[in-house]
Figure 1 (cartoon, rainbow, N blue to C red):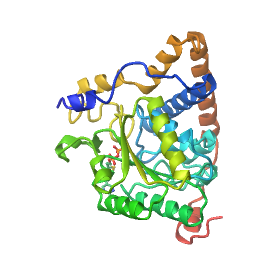
Figure 2 (cartoon, rainbow, N blue to C red):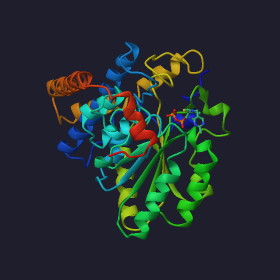
Figure 3 (cartoon, rainbow, N blue to C red):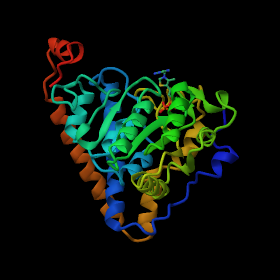
Length: 347
Ligand SMILES: Cc1ncc(C[n+]2csc(CCOP(=O)(O)OP(=O)(O)O)c2C)c(N)n1
């Protein structure tokens, strides 16, 4: 099924280098490092899942890194960020401690939620990540709720709701869009449109591949962006976040992207050739957000090739060390789940 590289998608996304004018060397280095960290951490999780070190399903977002990194750049720890089942990138982009993150994925007591949540129930209050849940669309009204609270308390706190093109199909999302608009809540809905809901192409689910029409229907200002272009995400993210702090909002960003792995687990090709074509994956890999940023940095002489190679090596070393440290941690006792989950006396 050859479809994601249609004219409509082609006109928004590109394999070209990206425009880095007006960004400082330090800022770009910070964001590039974050994207590499997220990608390589997810590759580490993929291997861990393959070799049975990680239990339960993990949903990897390799290929989609530019979106949360570009948005998180303009957030602070008071802001409230919500994700869903594919949220490693969301919490990592906010700067969560890597060892506690891996410990959580490996179900260790030292994990951010004491190993009780795992890959799909991430929480990192210290960095403003208010939670991810596997119920598709489930966190969207929560983000609207925190935004309403922020408005009522005049706090200038912004809420971010990451959701997929599949989540857009949930009724609660439409109620949330309407409620956010009617109450002018400082929330930004960020749709990571990777064109698939599990194994089902958007073409088979919706009359159009773009979802921003739902924002229009609710009178919410929106922008459709190339989700693999970091600086484009930054530009709009910065503007919408500032305007939310100034009392405007809600806003809606539709960021077109693609995941390189199958819907779940470590197999890159789990649904390639079944529902996703190998050609499409190749097409999107040319639009790699990290590669495109690197090319621009090299072309503009912001960094030399060696600098980037060393940067990647250093990040990999941090990932390897954090992973080994996390693996060495102990697992919770069985009765702890009774304490934390059923008796609700989480300390
Ligand atoms: C309420 C609900 N319905 C269905 C599912 C099954 N399900 C899990 S992930 C998923 C696809 C979600 O697609 P999307 O929102 O586009 O996110 P992506 O997986 O592409 O990141 C579905 C349907 C679920 N977890 N929750």
